[in-house]
Image (cartoon, rainbow, N blue to C red; front, top):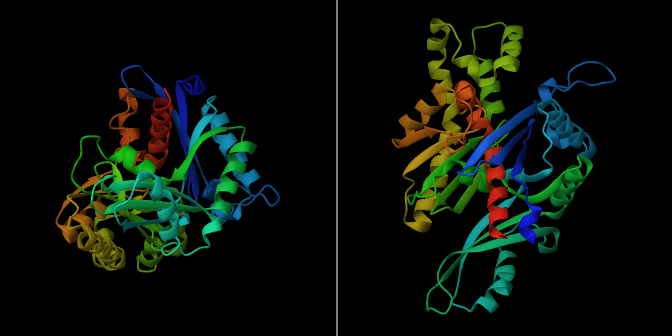
Amino acid sequence: MLSRLFAKKFLGIDVGTTSIKMVELEDAGRGLALANYGQIDLSLVENQESDTEERGRAMADFSAAEIAEMVQAIMAKARIKTRQCALSIPDFLTFFTSFSLPPMTEKEIAAAVMFEARQHIPLPIDSVTIDWQLIGGTFGKPEKMEVAVTAVPNEIITRYKEIAQKANLQMMLMEAEAFGLAKALVPENETAAVCLIDIGMQSTVCNLVQNKILRYSHSFDRGAEYLLRDLSRQMPIEREVIDAAKKKYGFKIFSLMDPDVKKKMEKPFKEAFIPILQEIETALADYRRSSGIDAAKIILSGGVAAAPEIKSQFENHFHKEVLIADPFARIAYPREIAEEMKNIGPSYAAAVGMACRGFDLGKSVR
């Protein structure tokens, strides 16, 4: 009976720091196909009272009702009718940890997880909703149990439920964006550890996934906005021109520079990126220490990931295979929009993954 609740189309919605992205996928029989997509950026949201653009605001500054209006605006413009959706919660709003437990039975582990989680989560346990999964060990055997725990503040869950309700959406799933990224970017048959780096406007998240399981997550407050701010101060270009270019092109402005200007920016670019690379290097070393496993490759997502300069920085620093996120790789879509899908793919990874997770949920109840 539950399978009838799931339609043949599903929405994945990524409510980010400075934008909302939405992907509508449909069951095409032999796989999933792209039905529609759309986004809204806060840089383009107008203040209706003053008729001037909002500047410096983040999604957290808007009410649930205002965000719901933005969601409805995307759906209206893209003519999206599907109401069933999965929403991703930014990783920096969630807490992820993993720990070991002594051998125990299936009946004992739930209470043990809640007890141990109190030692790892920096919030009162009754103020968060906890989800966990067993990632190592077997019940009934004399071996340690490895558990991964995700905790989301209850106030965040309430806010997202309100957004869905006011947007007239049927929310079937809500979880940390790391799970959507893993679903969209890591192939089903991949057994090696993969490092997923998502560079957002305000923060960067480093996730380690192995055998389709999220095993490690670390976020820090340095993202595209930090890079753009640091670099723009050193650009040999007038401030007004820089601000206009940043607004229109984002991080792509570095790819569009005059060759002479670009050459002058090579050293500042590398220097600005060092703190981000060092933070990720520390995270990889931490995972390697705790698991004995090194990441085999790195996949870059986020709005700035498509810039060639970003990929080369990671390759030169880590000496690993580095890929640009392509969440549409296993999604069918018309050939004539292939270039567009390649360009927007890195920034749509979480939305695509959440839509795929929605279909997975539907299959699990059939």
